[in-house]
Image: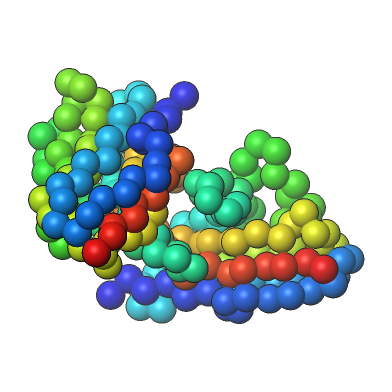
Length: 116
Length: 113
């Protein structure tokens, strides 16, 4: 149990367009989901914490108007990169924390975004 | 603030060698501690965890003990395999409602046959 999926697994888009990435908890309900960004050979940088039914909490330095997060249900959170630019190219990873569970987070396989 | 420090890599070992990856943390309160592993091109998988002092987490031959006195959570394996080649992340969960994870910088392990 505790499987998290992401879609798409990779995407290429043109500069100026928007891209939506989905994160789903497949076999459990997640009250909290997290979005991370990972640059090559670097650690994960937490972008925002998303709670079902409420606004996301963004980390310092993350533009909330650029990275729109929606957590509409207990199994789905979406990250939309608006007006993407080449510097937004990165590996985006989501994780989910089980409702009523411990602090353990279950990670999705990641989405590779390339902006041309 | 809370932080995690890992030994710098890459770590290169021969198959069947003993592995230690050091991890120390700074935190207020009593965080839960984790080791995650990331294989090339994939997301993170939980390797093991410990939720209180002196707990030992273990999985797939890997072990780590939560040492409060030294604020450490070193990862060990007695005999590594080529398939263990990956990036290993030490992390702590902030003891708050959100349970945010603070990651170390990651240590790349390469095991040669």
